[in-house]
Image (tube, rainbow, N blue to C red):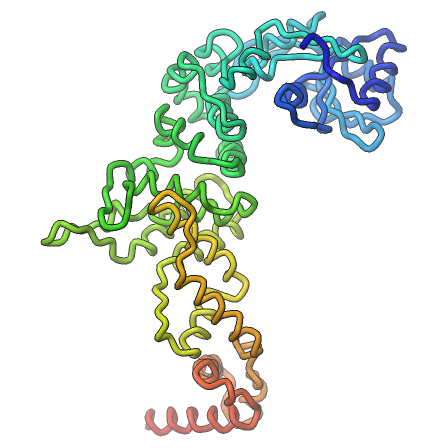
Length: 453
């Protein structure tokens, strides 16, 4: 394919540049996606015009990265990133070029890019393809190959090895053997990259259909041990019983089975057993136990997420799910037990905890599984919630002021009594009336006063 169809908006944009005496090319992910048969309207373009010249052509331009030759052009509802042809030299920080120089040809600009699949340009408006590094072949072969020597590309930017494994997961591509062999030698450069940038690549990987593809490349290349050594320690930790995999392969599989659109659950699935190597005990019969592994896993997950600068809210959600994932439902549970489960997990977290448990169960045997006991518990929870019972202090028919007005002194004791009232209501929802709760609270207070004398 020597030409690609050009969107009318890009045709009109290129006319503005040609009228000013400049060439314009579509570059980057939109071109790659076009060869993959995907539509893309997130466009990047390249031109020989300098940022200052671009700003003279258009009435409004956002100076997003003038130091690196980049501006953003708001045009017909799109924000189009426009970069001047450039070459780069020196990468002392392992991430950014020490200097750039504007170039006169698109081929020079493409030569600085990371992978051949990202080093294809489309001339605008005629749609002619410029492919000096055989990026179309790499896309056809579904393989990730660096532009030039991988050792040089990775030495320039320590994020590129992570981008390679992330693209492998997103696109379900393999990684060229020479490219993959170069990653271990680049680990010291990757170690210089800001934790926030590493986190962003990891999240993009986890958003792919099968994160395990990229995670396995991370493991084999040494990236996993560099970034999340706690996960690496799960390799070879056998579990026996129903488990078809060791702990690490189980975590990979669980992550794949977790909902793609719910990143906190996917992270929880990846980390939910990460504490098992530290708590594993071999019993006399040769079987393994992992008592309280959920607590150890939550602590480790929190440490990893803090290190990678995840938002506090996300880390809190993930660690809560990990701590709660080891519940054991039985048909003999009373309705009160179901209500206490809802309170412990939190009504807002119920969908997530069931998604996590389904991913966990599926990751044990490597196929989609929804255990019947989970289905039964879900039905019972829905039935209990439909009855509009109290599941938190805010749902009680009384509050702290009511107790204070009923003769209980203000202070910590009011909070203690409210917690006891909630426990009573969880056991018997008919108690949740103001008169009954005031009577119960008065009795609790009298009993405490009497016992303290």
